[in-house]
Image 1 (cartoon, rainbow, N blue to C red):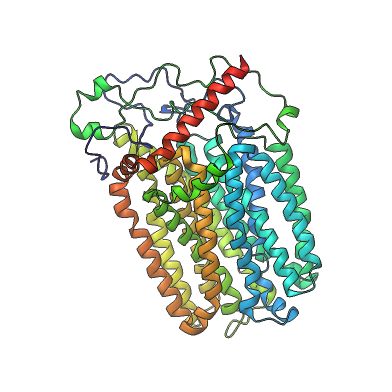
Image 2 (cartoon, rainbow, N blue to C red):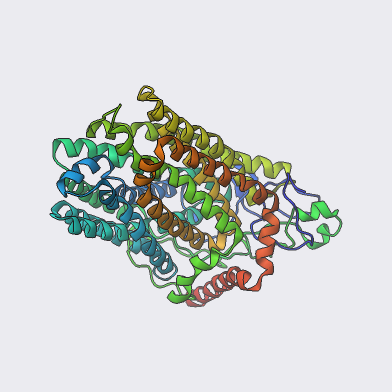
Length: 558
């Protein structure tokens, strides 16, 4: 048992288990493996190729600028959902509709994002990531203009529905880019950065429109969103080249040679893989290709990626939901976001009435709290995740297990329970407004820790299917949040603030505790997936298709 993780009964290859630290039993050959130049003890996973166009070989500055630009695209799309939260009371009067109906302006963005995310994710292996995110940002600008000119409830609902469609591709793109640009030991930090950008966007979008609504009217919130979308389009166009790259998969799983493993005891065997890297596994091409010029990298379309059909790609997000690991992480990820979204959508209902009676601007200013909490969590969560992973791998004879990422869920458990119960009790006890505002922000920090844990876990456990897994996350999240948003207003009215948020706190405890059996049995669960032919075929098929595409590209280069 490696650090509490049960080993598989037979000594066989398990996807996700990887040699990360050069602290292995005598006889393991690691001299030909590429290592982190800033920390030579850390082996680079996946192993980068010798191609200068491989995104893993880009300079750190280029990687960061690309990732920040794409995070801006994802954030501007995220802003669309909750941007009207602080204006719900004004829209209730404007369209003569109940608050339950007006809340649909936010929830319909979520539900329409689900099919868009699904289709966009299916197109990525075929057309790449760059054209999808650029087109989605343009569509958001167009629908923002539509929303600004809407004169009826139906027209506004239609504008928001199409805006939801534009929100799908950025989430699918950025989720996959983390694995394209960064190595395993870096992904915790960048997953946390993406989570921070998402959560801050969720919370800043009601803040800024609150001032716009009071000074200029709610329509100007849409005009300004359209302008920001065009600016972000420019950032992505000039700073974010295509990151979709076909690489050899043989360099991803690094472990002991079979003859060395045979001389180890059963527990030691269970902590490593059963395959040795072939000599050519570290390079995609036999010789480096010429680096593309900056102008060449600005091409929107970089050609069709062969080897996978659209219909095959379309079914994959639903198939990966049959993986116990992905289903577990999807549910946990969705629920950690749900609490923040439900709190955000209940603010106008709770804080806009007695005894607080907050104005539209005051409701918007409340979102400063989650912004601050999220930024603090970002500074801690990603680095902490990578720190735990590297040090636990060191204690585990240099072998990394994806389950090490789940340790961060402890923070979600503690902060989540404190924030939900604290918010409910402070409101029902009519304490000073600082109390509910403090706990409101704390919940965003909890979500940041939780999201970093779940996303990093799936990316590390199923790297070849990371994009499909994260798309499944998004679909799961959109559908569940839409259902909960539809009932949250009436739920609070019928059950009261105290019972509602204590119930949510208990649900958070349950979700977090499911991580305990998954941590202990995660490796056996991954092995179980490989033993089921229908499930394992998807992982193996992806590897075979990667190798076919690699061979085809090498023939074309010759």
